[in-house]
Length: 390
Image (cartoon, rainbow, N blue to C red):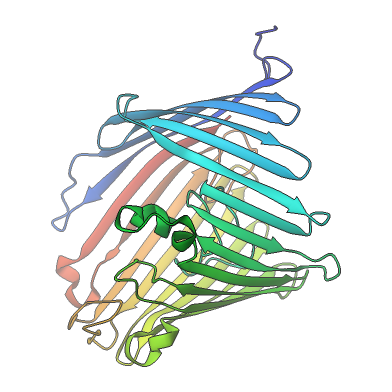
């Protein structure tokens, strides 16, 4: 066996890859005095072995945030013509504590890959019917680390169409000690029905989530609907919208509406955009958030300057509900304003973005937690970091 390392490959079937993230955060308190730096560090190296459809890997990971820590993980998978199976195990906290199952899943294709079935105890990332991700709680179709059964159908006769159903198995995992242990009963207590139609100029999608409520409290039902649309207006301009209605079966008393819309422009070297969110809209309460940003490549593929502004009008009516999903009572209005300028530099000139694989970066978030009390609400956070992926 040849053990020489060349470009990350040290034999025909062996390879390695990894990532290093280093940095520090400085928080300034209300009086303008910085506390001690909050150090951040993360690194991992993965050794891979591949032989036809078989893949095995072992990952060594180290991190330092509040203190030193680390983990070791191992995974193996087999990728066949119409199926794939994977299992992964991990040991955490400096390889001293008990680990767990990081991944255990499989998928199968049927009818010339028009039908896909995922079965998972700790699943992979699955995104079938999501069009955009402006609202925080819109990954209903994603198994990622969770248990479930998901069926997606993409008929060849209608290009761009997909639809299906997902059954959430985490209810069974979380509640098995309090139930009879009936797997079918646990898996079918919560479900998502979804569909998406995607073309070059636009994409639309919808998901309905039903069954036990998301927090599994007292077995109550929560029927939620999410509708998404995205439009490519020109080669450089795109726009999108999302609407989520929560607790549809009790909308009058306990339901609420979330809305988000955005527009983006991207034509090198300039990118810019605006996202508007209206959250938790219900009778007398709600939040309104504006997030514009602009970014410009000062040096192609090497240096990027970016500015983001967050303007949030929270609890606009000053009277949130006292029952239902949100239990806040009589909160005052809060108006927030933050500015976040940032610089990203890639010395290798292999490409640059605001989430780079290789870069030195510095960000400064400064603003006010409450514009109604400016003197006592100054927020200042400086982040300096370095990322390197290999």
